Image (cartoon, rainbow over all chains, first blue to last red; front, side, top):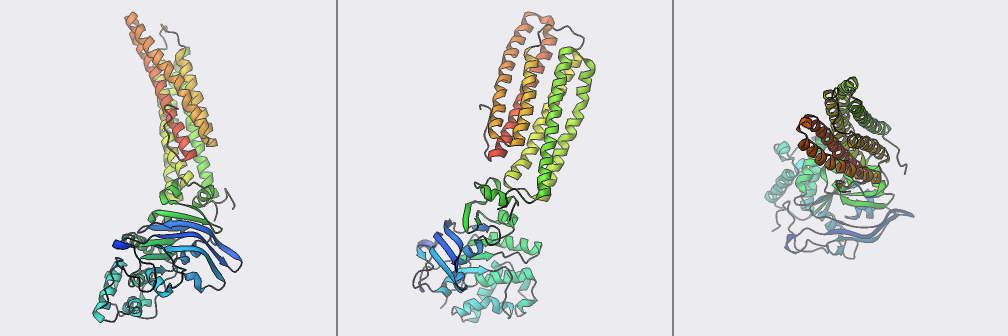
Length: 276
Length: 223
C-alpha cells in the first residue's frame, strides 16, 4: 500500500538512486561546489560554491541575466532541457550529486519541486491537477488520492476556497488561485525542496501576499528557494539572500545583513535600486 | 555596472534630508554662540533673540521627522540609505536638544544681565566654542560619511568633560567660600552642565555618523 503523502518529508529509502533525507528525518543538506553552467560558449554561472540552509527560505536576487534562474534550475536539472547547456561542478543533495550517474531525473524532480512565474495548471479539473503527480507515481486508490488532494490544497491555503468545486476546471480559478494550485500540485508528490522562479510576478498584491504567507508556512517543512525581482519580497520572506551578478554569486548572507549592511559595494548598489 | 545611477529623485531627497540636518545643526551652533555672547557681554536683547530662535530648531526637527517618515513609507530605503534615513531622525533629536540647551543658556544670560560677575568667564566660553566646533565638524563628517572624522569629533568631548569637572569643583568651592555668590555660581554651574550635555549629544550624533558610514554600532564615549 502506498503511503499517504503528507507535507512532512519522511522518506528514508532511496529507490531510484536519488539522494535521500538524512537519517532521523533530518532535512537534506543542499549545496553546490564550484558550480558552473555554460550555454554553448557563454558562461552563465561561474564556479558557485554555497550551502543552502534546510527548511528556510533562501532568496536569489540580481539583475536580468545574472544567473540566478540558471542556478535555481540546477537543483532539479531543469537546465537539461536547454540545448547546448553544460554543467560543471557539483550540486549536492545530501552527499550525492544530482548530476551523478544513476540519478533518476523524474524522481529528482518529485523531490525537488518547482513553481514557475506563470501559473501553469493542466487543462483538467482542480482535483485532477493535484492528483496528477501522485497518480504518475503509482497512487491509485480513490480514497488515498482524495486525502492527498485535500492535504495538499490545505497546505497550499486553497482548500477552503475550492473544496466545494473540485471538479471545476483549473482555468476557472483566478491567477493567484492557479498559482496556489500549482504549489498544491508540487506538494502532492511530497517534495523536500521547492524551487520558485518569480512565483508572484504575474500576481496582484493581494495574491502575492497570500503566496508569501504560504511560503512562510511551507518553510516549516520544506527548503524553499525563490528567485525574485521584487527585493522587498526577498526582504519580507527570506532568511538568507544570495546576490548574483554576471554569473557570480557576489554575496550570500542573512537577508538582514544583505539589506542593512551588505559586505560588497555591488550588493549595496543593487539592493538600494541604483542599478539593475 | 552603472554605479551610483538610478533613483535620482530619491537621492535628491536624501541630500535634502542631510541639508535640513545641517540647517538644524547650524541653527543650534549659532544659538549657542550667540547665547554665550549674550552671557559674556550681558546682552539682554541678544539673549531674548536666542530664546525665540528655538522655534526654528523645533520646526527643522519636525521637518526631518516628516521627511524621514515619507522616505520610509514611499521609498523603502535599505542598507546605507536606510541607515541614513533612520540616523537622520535620531541625529535631529540630538541636534534639537543642542538648540534647547542654547536656549537654556540664553535664559541664564537674561537673568544675569545686570549682575556683576564674581567668577571669570573663561572656561565656560571655551566649552561653548568646543561644542560649536564639534557641531560643525560632525555635520562635515556626515556629508563626507567619514567615520574617522566622527571619531575625532567624539574625542573633542574629552576637553568639554574635563572643563566641566574642573568648573564644577571650583564653583562649589567658590559657593562654600562666599555664600553671597551662591545664586550666581549656581546659575553658572547650570550653564557648564548644559554645555557638558551638549557635548554628549554631539557624541551621539558622531556615533550615528559612524554607523551610517560603516554599518557598525560603536560607542564613541571613550573613543
